Each structure stands twice: as structure tokens, then as C-alpha cells.
Length: 368
Image 1 (cartoon, rainbow, N blue to C red):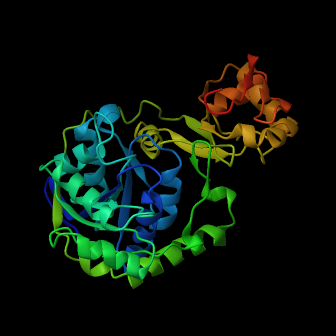
Image 2 (image 1 turned 90 degrees about the vertical axis):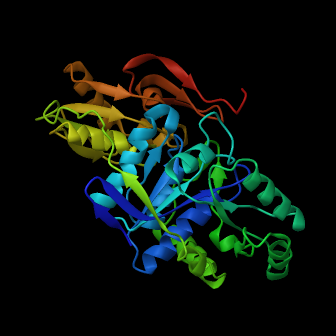
């Protein structure tokens, strides 16, 4: 339960980390968020690090916006303020944070944020091809530093497998949940990370979240979660933005399977500065929204949808006219590729793009 008093907001919080990437952090975090949501909690999930894909899964799990937290890019005060706002303005009564890579990876790592914010850590370990050694890894990670609390670990292969790990762990680092391997909750990956949920059927992602929530509840994780104490988050002195700097402006943001790499905080900032936000699809729509005074083409996977983008000639004509009218266009990453003359995909196929910038974008395999 959340408690707010003046400049301090409190609610239970948990940081989910792992020894390494591809350990199942996103799956566990999203499914735990769904489980807590089913039990009446207003859950807000945050993603540590500049990640575009995991938050899309986490938003489906929690049914609430996900904000990325990064100590190096945004600073400690800004990150704390986002959680404070989630509790006070978003009425969150439970906070989950998914870490990035391994617990100690990077100069401003997951452990640093957990320590600075006083949030306990639960370790997600994929114990494939090990048993008691998983306990040694968990204890080693817990004892590597002493400025944060590690409260438990989870993810195993079978009931017996989980018991081996549980028996090897010390009493003060219990196994919260031993999850059996189940393809029904696995999330597919490709280059850059997880496949976007928007590219799957709605019942596909929902069935995985619900199945994962069922597994966590059957594994007995809720009694452990219920022991978490409220963590205080103080309001921070963040420089105020000018509330009318963008008053009267409407920013049209491309959002579909080809363009989806945006940060929630950036869109919130534009709105805080007075801008109106609307969305359009360069794949499906015929033109840029008529009310738009500026366009944002974010990153994404235009190479996977190059044929559809190329064939939508009416949208390309609309974008060219917008550019010729001297209206501002921000394009980054995949959006920048869309603005070029030509895009060559990973199979070597060539597609005509919008042609706002001379040049050809060529996709290469990793390391190419």
C-alpha cells in the first residue's frame, strides 16, 4: 500500500536483476506485474537503462506506462522523481524495476541504483545445466557488495531441480519461486532484442503473461512479496520546464511495427511543455495528420517493413510535402533510414524510401 505525506511517498518496491542478459528478467518482471495487477495492485514498472523493447512487454504486463531509468543519462534526482511521480500522481502502490544486463555490469549498474534508492533485489537465475552452483552464484553476487539487500532468487527447471537449489541457499537468501521450464511463457528474440508485442496477436502476448502469472502464483511467490516493506521516495528539486514553450504545437509521432523506439519520458516532457501529441502509421495511414506542426520519426525496424513502407506512396508524398513546406521533422535511427533515398534490407533487397536525404541505408549483420 502506498503512503504519501508532503514531499515523501512510500510504497513497496522490488528490483529484479540477474547474473547476465538473457536470464529471463523481462519475462519474470512482466508476469509478476500481471500477477500483482490481478490481485488488485496498481503496479508501476520501470526499466533500468536505455531500452526500447523490454518496456513494451512490461507495459502489457502492468497495464501502465513504463519509464526508463538511467543514472548516467538522467541523473539520480531525475530517476527518483519519476518513481515519486508514479506514486503521487499515478497512484501506484507497488513498484517493480527490471535491471539491465548483469547486476554489476557497467559504471552505473543495476546494483548502484538499488543501493542509492534503498530497493531490495531479487535475483533471476537461469539454472540450466547447474544445481547447487546456482546457490554459489547467488551468494557470491549478494556478498560482492554490502550496500543493498538481496532478498531472494528464482527461476529453475523442475520441482526437484528447484529443491536442490533451495536446499543449497542460506536461510537469509531464500528461493522465492522455482519456475519450471515452459514454452508457453517464452518470449522470442531477434537482432536488437525481444520481438515487439505489437507484431504478435493480442491473445498471444496475453496468454504468455497470464500463464507466467499463474506459474509464479503456483510457485508461491506472493507470500515473499508481501513481506516487502515500503520504500520512501522523496520529491526532488528538478528544474522546471517552461509550460508554454510548445503551446499551440502538435507533434505527430510515427508509431507502428516499423517505428516504436521512443522513451515515455520524452513524450511526457513534450506534453509538459505544452505540445499536443498525435500518432500516425507510415505503414498503414495515407498521410501525416493534418493538425501536425512537426513530425517525429523515431527508431524501430523499418528494414523488416521496407516493402510496405515503400509501397505506401501516398504517405511518402505527404511527408515530402511536409518537408517542402519547411515544417520541422526529427528523424533518428530507423526514422533516419526512412528519410533516405533507398533502404537495403538484410537479404540484400532494395526499396525506395522517402528521399528527403540523399543516400542509401544498408543493413548489415552484427559485426558487418
